[in-house]
Image (cartoon, rainbow, N blue to C red; front, side, top):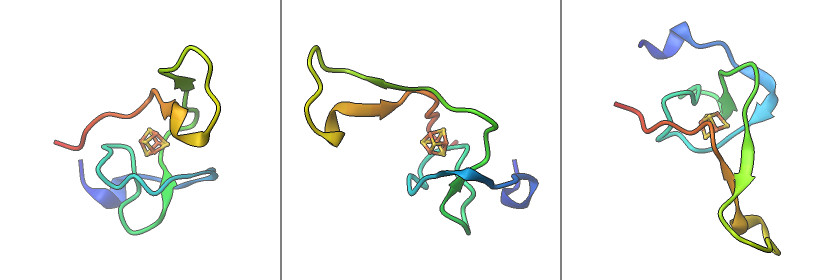
Length: 58
Ligand code: SF4
């Protein structure tokens, strides 16, 4: 997919430019909606949270 096919969702800021859904020239996600979760039993800091919509860029 070309980068300019993606439309930045101004409601979802993201700096993970290794993700397929990242709008490369802008720090936004292109999805309409994302899912955030945790890999911890008792999350205490932001590092405990994950974007579960992440897909590695091919
Ligand atoms: S899916 Fe998640 S990690 Fe990927 S660009 Fe959107 S917010 Fe960022």
